[in-house]
Length: 247
Image 1 (cartoon, rainbow, N blue to C red):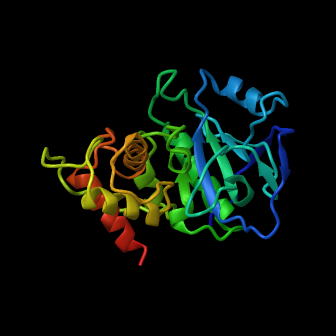
Image 2: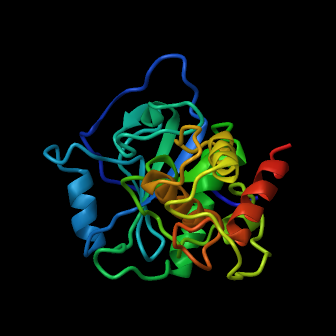
């Protein structure tokens, strides 16, 4: 049995009361998206920023706690998952130091991912978080966010018992796919299945820009080999196997 991770403490003033009657049953991963971890940590602890997270994971594997778990950290902003719009009241937010797409996105170091795994195992000893509710910021805010992005090793986390995952085994082939401008029953079915999984997407027969954003978010999490917002054979098959795995 592994020991609980050791935390540095960098208290952030940016938190509030969790909404009553909502259990902590979600974990949301973010990347910092700033040029350095030090600047990101300072920002998350600055009262002027209006943002925070419960935990911050440095590239070298150090973990800082910014907000106590019983408090509502301000990490998800306007977001949605499976009918819930107050994500912050029922989630633990984890910021992972990485410059992100804007400042030179890079793979997450091994020590950092080991720390993320250890942190999640520790959180899961206290909170009953279903695997399918361990999510990316881009999952819960696909029109606004890209993090933690397509380099985040979700499959590795799943192998460690964290998160919901099926391998994207179907080949990337250029066959008829659904994309912006398409409409009809196939598009309506795709949108409905994405909504069943949890994404914010109303039912409808048009593959519009919002649909492409949701498909892109899905690919960043579950089909990382090609992230283009096109619902190709591999993307759709992966979605269907994820839904089937929910039981």
